[in-house]
Amino acid sequence: MAGFIFGEFEEEKVACPSCKWIGLGKDLKPIEFHESLIFDLGCPICMEYIGFMSCPITEQYEAFKKRTNS
Image (cartoon, rainbow, N blue to C red; front, top):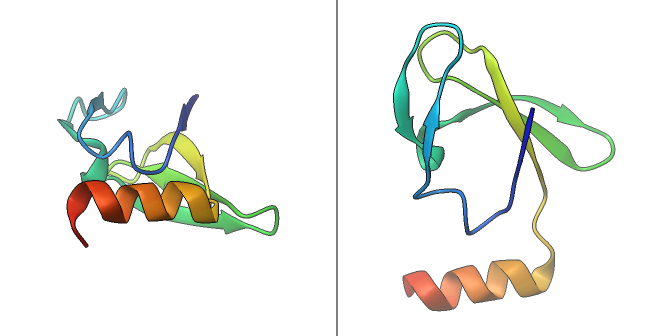
């Protein structure tokens, strides 16, 4: 189980243990949202659970926007 950090994992390589897909973190798909503001992320091919990410705090989101000129 991997914990991903918003604004950092998007360009990291990830792999699915089930179907062996390899891609970037930004390609993962949300598969469940928990009341504790955590997203479970899964493989875009087979939806196997790969890890989770907390919703970003304001500072993380602002730093991401600044880095990506969004």
